[in-house]
Image (cartoon, rainbow, N blue to C red; front, side):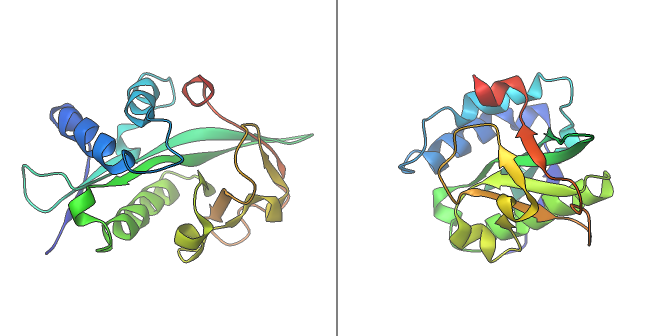
Length: 177
């Protein structure tokens, strides 16, 4: 079945809330605050609707959702803005069919076109590693949040995009609350 990947619309919000809740309910590491995080991120100054995408098999059904938010890498003499993926969700009945990978690819394309150098994610290396993500520490980029060892991952969107960028990754307030 073919999917369309579309910029989220306010009419999609309720269905996205339900999808994200259902997708994260069985996840052991989830604190159950993903829907609230989305709501808070939409209120931030840097929110860009074009970086919040839904996957639809039909005009009125959403089976996937992803949101990228600008974050800052602060080094000793520089600051670089990249985007962080949080959350990426696929409806339980659609998991394991490549929806997440296609959605991730669409988000990465949009981020690249918007001029961002990289995508950061706190996630499973088994899943994201097969999609080009590597340990952020490989680029001397450290996370300002307490995240599990080995789960802070990053993907440069163009060759050399993270050369000489190392530093501390800082998130907008909704990630810290």
